[in-house]
Image (cartoon, rainbow, N blue to C red; front, side):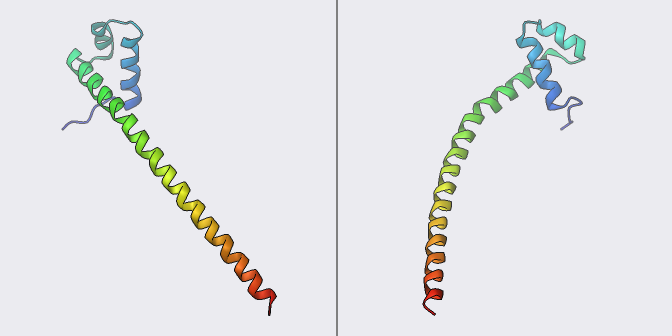
Length: 91
């Protein structure tokens, strides 16, 4: 599969031009792409946008799980530090 000569940022800028009201044919002509290419890019962007909320939820859940794990480990660490201080004070 051939790699596009446009970067993701350039593709996003082209898609934004159309969403701001410019006709698809005019934007495609000015950038040297076919309307079919434009619509392929648009569909790929829509697929990415629909996957982002799911990914965001997964990251939030993972973040909550890691925060809980850190809190438990911090408590255990504090308990061990207190125990060591008490055991060295008695010697």
